[in-house]
Image 1 (cartoon, rainbow, N blue to C red):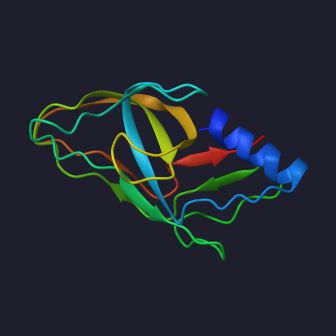
Image 2 (cartoon, rainbow, N blue to C red):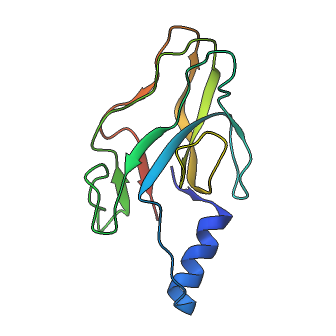
Length: 143
């Protein structure tokens, strides 16, 4: 995952070049999509109605560091998840998961998109199925 939203681009530019404060969320929500978002947002996040039991996975961060993301690699710009991110068992069909996004909110359909990207392999999630990112599978690269 390497794409940055327009929202985060604006915040970074303002922080670096204008000295305007930017405080990232202390808990991020990792969202699953059946249609990819773009720089301006959008996309189709898994729907929660009808007993799907979908919820964004919460990843706790803090201004002093996170134990849920690896330390960024200085030569590659890579950080990845150090804990398994496992979503609830689907209570209904979620559809084909194609993309993932990281938000400043754990509430489905809310918050500002930070990063997004397509999965290497799409996954169909039907009722009774599970979805997870094993340790090191969710990569964020700034290059």
